[in-house]
Image 1 (cartoon, rainbow, N blue to C red):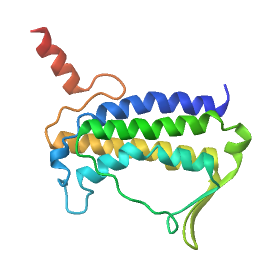
Image 2 (cartoon, one colour; image 1 turned 60 degrees about the vertical axis):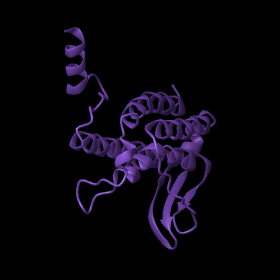
Image 3 (tube, one colour; image 1 turned 90 degrees about the horizontal axis):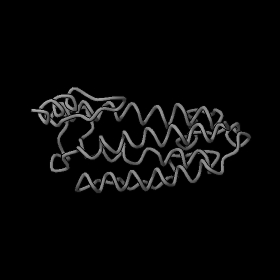
Image 4 (tube, helix red, strand yellow; image 1 turned 135 degrees about the horizontal axis):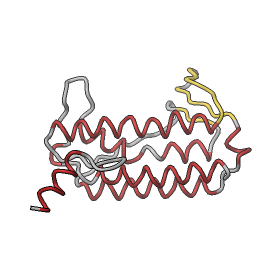
Length: 172
């Protein structure tokens, strides 16, 4: 299996799990944060919904310069809007990955902020650490936010305690 096909399979599986998490976000609590130093729920859930854009950026360019990037934060007004935004970003990432050869994924990719180079590494390594692992980190963070808000947390790799309780209640 080529590297791009492996990454595509992982992205499909993980994006389905991310969609489940995003579908539970109570957007009426977008300004809530568990601590003054924490991101607000609306910002975190938006970040999770669009992190697959970084996969597209890595495949289609040789660098990302935060100083040159015009970023307009996305804040959803509903969980449905979050999921739809996530699905759109994932579709673009899948399309980019479809055309990515192993040779392309071996090329160097740089993350910078103006003259400050944060890192340069092969695209395939940047994709794993900067994009995929970053998605999982923030999705886990989002699960804690949901727990603290007493929102049932969906299982990512099998049923969660909330899923198990719902199944038990449905059986009775």
